[in-house]
Every structure is written in structure tokens, then in C-alpha cells.
Amino acid sequence: MLKILWTRLQQKHRTTAYPKGPAPELPPRFLGRPKIDMSRCTPDSCRSCAGACPHGALDIGERVRIDLGKCLFCGACEAACPAGVIEFTREYRMAVGRRGELEVQDAAYRLAEALDAKSRKLFGHSLKLRQVSAGGCGACEADVNVLNTVGWDLGRFGIQFVASPRHADGLLVTGPVTENMRLGLLKTWEAVPSPKLVIAAGACAISGGPYLGHPEVHDGCTRLLPVDLFIPGCPPHPLTVLDGLLRLLGRLEKDGR
Image 1 (cartoon, rainbow, N blue to C red):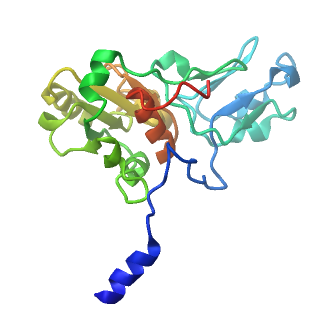
Image 2: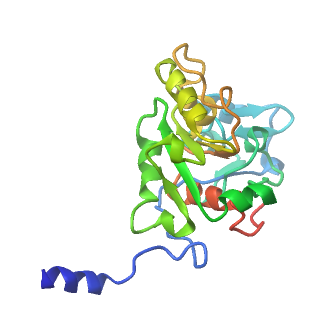
């Protein structure tokens, strides 16, 4: 027992200092918010990137546009572009408040705004969420669960996941919402007392992800519930999820647009 206590003392404090301190180091293979440089693009003669995207997240009209609500962050479009127009950066800040704001062009990206003053008064210091896996593969669920570990300690912000929707202030939805989970999701939503929030985490919850258009899924929760926060990714990194939650609660400065 003494040996265990001594080892624990040597480990010291391991919770990340973010957001007061620097963000934790991201893994080498992390692909964050893409950057588009249209000055290098010749859309009339080359559509390599659009052809490489396996899920139709990339559109070429007069300009190249990437829908982060559909993007699986595979990096295929970046690899296919011979001119280096698309570059997946290390930018983890991607959560937005409206579905249409998930579109990346060569213009500024609008991050999520904080809730209004009345909602921040209700949820700003204590936000209880019920997580609903509506047919997810487990990846988004696993990365969200990481926030409960000692390394992230989500509870220090007053944000906690609860077992019952009756005790929750909102839902965090993952998965494409399969037909088998549709009724369960709607009943869980109805059981949450008003006022309440909905957070869609991951490409599946936002658009259906790789299952978009499949007859057995509902292409995410956006057609069924009023979503307040969209967190893109496949799966979204825990830092991306935490950044989105803190922005929603007005805990972060309005930077990084």
C-alpha cells in the first residue's frame, strides 16, 4: 500500500492545464480543420480532390468547399490534390452553433458562440448531459468518455454525464441514429426537463457520416432534434469536444475565427 501511495505521489498532478494553460499535445497523425488556398486551384481543369472524397463532403463550384459535417478527416482529398490547395492543419477548434457554419472555404471559419445570458445563468456553472449512442461504432463514445478520466477531469468545469435523462440538462448524441434507436432517442429527449440542449458529436450524429443515405439510418439527429452545438470529427478529438463545450458555456475567449 505504501508503495502505491509513493508511486502516486511521484506521478504528481496529471490533469491538463487547458484552457488556462497550453493545450495538450496532439498525436502526430491528428488531422484538424482543413485550410483551403484557392490561389493554387484550377477548378476548371482538375477535380482530383472531389473525386477522392469517398463521402461527398467536398464540392467544387467556383470555389472548393468542404462540409465538416460530412468529412471523415481521412485526408484523401489533400493527398489527391496535385497543387496543395487543401491542407489538414493541427487546428482542433471546430465546433459551431449552426449546421451551415460547418462549411470550410478559403474564408474565415465561425466558431460556436456562447449561449445567451439566461441560458448561461442556468447551465454555465453546472451542465449535466445524458449521452445517447444512437447506433454509433463506439469511437465517438470512447473519445467523449476520455474527458471523464483524470487527464481531462471534465467535472472541474461543472460538466458531468448522468445516467438518467430526468437529471440531465441536455443530450450529447453520437451515431447516425438508426431506425432501431430513433424512438429511444426521441423518448430520451422528451424525458429531459426544459430548457434543454442538444449536442451532436461526430460526423454520424451530424449527417449520418459514412452511412449517409442508408435506408436504416436517419442521417444523424439534426432532422429529429434542435441541435445547439455541432462538433465535427470522426471521431472528434477529446480536445475538440471540450473546446466546443466550453465555448457553448462562454468559458473561452472569442478567438481562432
